[in-house]
Length: 145
Image (cartoon, rainbow, N blue to C red; front, top):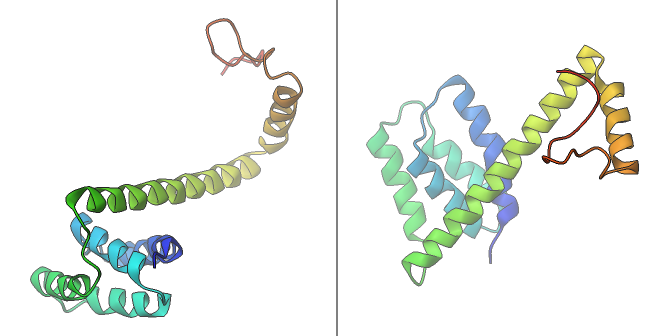
C-alpha cells in the first residue's frame, strides 16, 4: 500500500518543525518520506516525525531512529525502485512548493492592487491566446514592465 497523501502531509509538518530549529538533513527527509509513503496511518507518521525531531537528539540518534523505522518497511526490489520513489517524493514536493508560491503571489497581488489587472490580462489571453504571443514566443501585453 502506498500513501502519497501521507508524504504530502509531511511537507508542511516538516516545514513547521524546521521553522524554529532546522535539524533534518535531506537524507533524513528522504527517509521520512519513504516511511510516510509506506504507512497507512498518518498519525503513526506524525509520531515518528516527533520522535525523530526531538530537540535533545543528536544527529546520530535521529538517524538510528529513522533507520530502525525504515528497515521495517518493504524492501525495494532494486535500486531503480528507490530512484522512482525518490522521484515521486521530489515531484510532489515541487508541486507543494509551487502551490505555496502561487498562494504567496496571489496574496502579494491582492495587497498591491494588481489582482484585477492580472485577472483582466488572463481573461484577455483566454479569449485570444494566440494574439497575445509575438512571433518570438514572448507574451505581448502592450505594457512595459
